[in-house]
Amino acid sequence: MEPLLATRIDSFWAQACSFFGSKEVRHLVGSDLQPRLLGRVLSRVGLPRPTEDLLHIIPSETTELERRFLFAYSAILWSGRHPALEIGPFLGGTTRALALGMRANPERRPGAQLFTFDRFMRYHTQDSLKTQVLPLIERGVLPASVLGGLGAQASFREIFEMLHETTTYAEDLVVSEGWLADSREKERTLRSAFAPPPGLRFDLVFVDGCKSWYGTKMFLRKLAPALVPGASLIFQDYAWHTCYWIPAFVHALRDHLRLVAHIDATYAFELVETFDPDRVEAILPDSIQAWNGEAVSTLFAQIIDLANERGDLDARVIHCLQEVAALLDLGDATTARERARHIASGRWSSKSAASIVAAFRRWRI
Ligand SMILES: C[S@@+](CC[C@H](N)C(=O)[O-])C[C@H]1O[C@@H](n2cnc3c(N)ncnc32)[C@H](O)[C@@H]1O
Image (cartoon, rainbow, N blue to C red; front, side, top):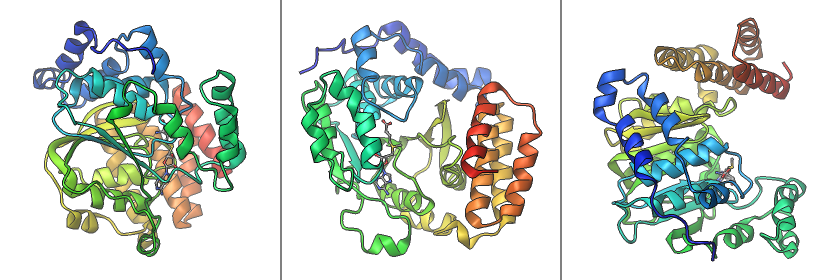
C-alpha cells in the first residue's frame, strides 16, 4: 500500500478554484476568459510532495499540468454524488490523477467509483511498450517479469493492474476492457465493445481513448443516456493537432456543452443540456469521407472563430492544424497544402511554432 496521502486539498487552493469557477467570476471576467483562468488555477494548486510525486511516476502522454488539473478538478469541482468514467487510461497516469482527486473530494459519496475502460492492447508496439515500462522496472515499481507477459499484441492490462492494485484508491477503481470501433461495420463485430455499466449515471467523464472519428461518435452515442445533467466531459485531445474529430463533435454538440476550463490540450465542458443517442447519430456523419473540403473548412472556420473570440491563440493554431489533418484524411491534399502554407506564413509563439513543426514533419509537408 502506498503512503496515505493528505486527503484534502489545502483550503486556500480549494477556495481559489471554487472562486475562479463561480458564476460571479464568469460575470466579472466573461465566459471567454474564465476557462483559461480556471484551468491555470486548477493546474497549479499546491500539493503535498508525496501526492505530487505519485501523480508523475507512471509514464503518461499527458503533461504534468494536465494531471494536476485532473486531480484538482475531481477534488474540487466534481460533485462527488455520481461515479466517474474514463476511456483510454493506458497505464493509468490519468486514472491515478482522477482517483486521487476523487478521494480528496470532501463531497464524495461512498460508492462513487471510477470506471475505466481501455482495449489494453495494440496501442504501442511491443518494443515501444517495453521502452515505456523499463524505467518502472529500474525503479523497482514493477518486476522485470512483466516484460514476458506483453505478448504479440503488446497487452498492458496486467501492468495496469499491478500499478494500481496496491494503492490507497484501488478499491475505488473498476477496470474493464472496452473497445471503440473505427467504423460502423467494425462495431458490429466487436467482441468487447465499450458500454457504460447498466443502471449507472456519471457526472465526470474523462476522454482519452477516442482515437478516430467514428470511435468518438460511438463513444458519445453509448455515453449519452448515462450522463447526469451538469456532468463534466473532459477531452484530453481537444487541442491535439491530429485529433480533429474531438473539436468537431464538441462543436456539433455546442448547444449542450459549455466550456468550463482548459490547460494544454485538455478541455473540460459542462453538460448544460443532456443529449440522446439519436442526436449523436444526427449531428455528424459516420465518416469524414461523407464530406468535401468545403464542409471541413466551414466547420473549422467556426471552431477557429470561437477560439479567437476567447483569445485562445494556442488552440487557434491547433485548430488550423486539425483542419489540415482533416483535409489530408479526406484526400484533399491540394487544399491541405494551401492551408499549411498559410499557417507557415504566420508569426506564432514558440509553443505554437513547435506544434506546427511537429505536425508538418509528421505529414511531410
Ligand atoms: C493517449 S493513450 C492514453 C494515455 C493516458 N490517458 C495517460 O495517462 O497518458 C490512449 C489510450 O486509448 C486506448 N485506445 C485507443 N484506441 C482505442 C479503442 N479503439 N478502443 C479502446 N481504447 C482505445 C489506448 O489503448 C490507450 O491506452
